[in-house]
Length: 87
Image (cartoon, rainbow, N blue to C red; front, side, top):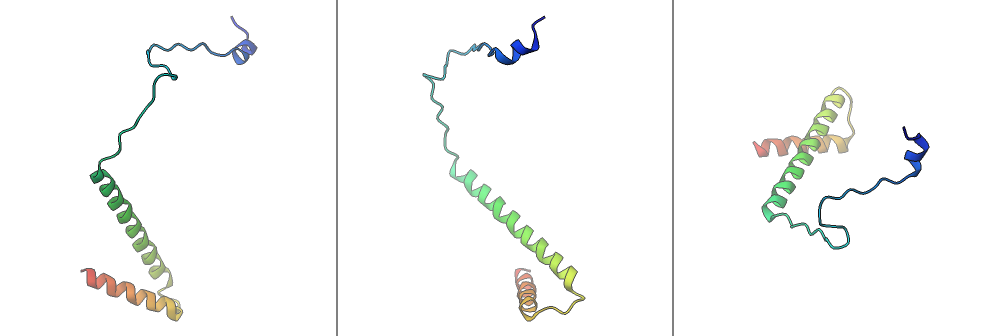
């Protein structure tokens, strides 16, 4: 049995079965197709808009019983008009 101190101080031997060593192999990634990037951007923008809507709904639910400042009332009016326009 080998003592634990030898395991910690002795480096592991490299056992590489592949003929491609670090020195003479260079990894080159292929770029993503443009349609993948477009779909990714669409998903990101959709997630952002859903998050914004969720936050606004939480604000509306929390503050409907309170007297809101004029700026917030105007924002909520614009939000409801925008929702009606989308429908």
